[in-house]
Image (tube, rainbow, N blue to C red; front, side, top):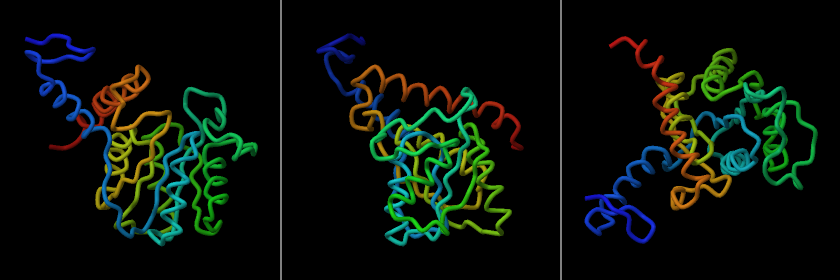
Length: 215
């Protein structure tokens, strides 16, 4: 029988079942892999600098020759929503997510010549679609790619990028934002809403894609 004990659900007083349930969600959503040398580092668009900072660090380590940040601004907004963290460090005026992410990369030591441009995407699927168009137009073959994204956004990002780059081996190097991490996301309302929202999106947003795939 499921009951509440010490503020958490338990089964007959044991935490095991509840912990397994949390572990399954955590392992699905918070994808993270060891990183190897690759052909490209991808940064899906957003207003947080942590992912581009992570990408810059990997670039400086020689993990890939190029970085491709992607993004215009959210389909729900009329413009770039602004810098959402470390605003005291990144103080420029940015019209798009790409402009912001490019500035973060430059400020953290990435050579301007190694930053590619994709500034049309307004949601995650378009990040992947237009990033693929960019690499195709440049004649780049991406055998291995590194994906720098929010930690709780990692599964959905990986699904979309893998769909558009089916022959690419992806490594996921995520960053925590908003105080949400794989260790304690279930301890706050904000974390629960963010992570379970991703679970819902992985089902809802992939419905049309999956049903249209040839079996």
